[in-house]
Amino acid sequence: MDAKVDKTLKITTPSELEIVMTRMFEAPRHLVFDAMTKPEHLQRWFGCEQAPLRICEIDLRVGGAYRFVMGPPDSECTLQGIYREISRPELVVFTERFSMPGFTGSEYRVATTFEDIGGKTKMTTSILHSSKEARDGHLAGIDQGVSTAYDRLAAFVESQA
Image 1 (cartoon, rainbow, N blue to C red):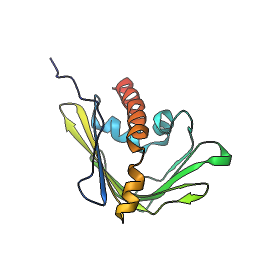
Image 2: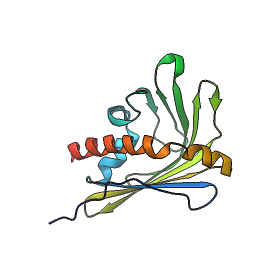
Image 3: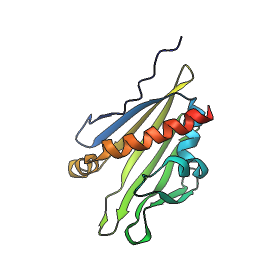
């Protein structure tokens, strides 16, 4: 019998510039990779109830861009960046910048690995900021937002497995 998968999001700060998030999913890594990189899948789980994903544009190639727009037009939030490295289904690396009315953060680097563990997936996302202040600002509230989104991601990929 399979051991129960720990679906708890773990967030650590291994340095003054980094945030590392780890979560297990009860689905093969190619499904988790696709759910993280294909617009038709992201629209099923990304964002939140108060700010659903309205626009999801992805050019998944090295040098390609992405843009996600969430929330109502009068207060929309945007995530956008450029893909730097892609190795399906093991790795995706990209830059990212968050913007909302009255605020645009500095660009940071995101690297997500997808590790196959007996047909399940360990997803690890490392975020590298240019300053401790930017990292600390990103940390504020990240656990609640990411945890909720990853719960929706888990339900989606498990329904596809």
